Length: 146
Image (tube, rainbow, N blue to C red; front, side, top):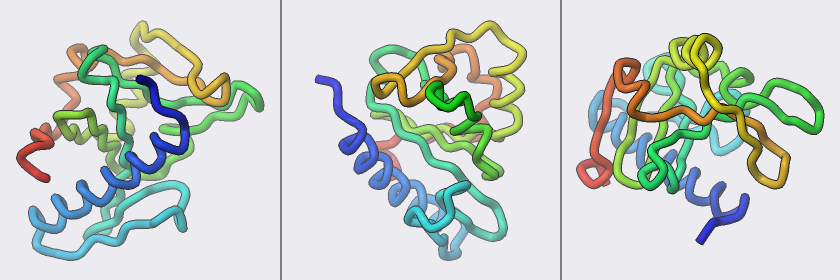
């Protein structure tokens, strides 16, 4: 069953907390989670910023949806609007860390499918996870960090 925007937002916020806890444990220092106060990143730790995205369908489809635009306004959104150093992508089983700039370069230079989501309120690149393995800086099993 597909979830709506509200359910996806709640799941994404849960994954932000999971990633923050993981980073705190890994670095031995406290993270600050933006809780929506800073729209261009979700987590900051030691001066590095992270944007966390969650996609429960990615394991089933093998694709990541990376938001790039609001088709109703034509304005760039998502990965382009973020100022985070790292883009963290959570599937149902894995948490993958990407350099945001490298992921943007991939989307702009490779043949990716552009699709709409959320009843036409978002547009993004459908990126095959298999095709971006070389860009993953860190790939952790979700089960291992919960």
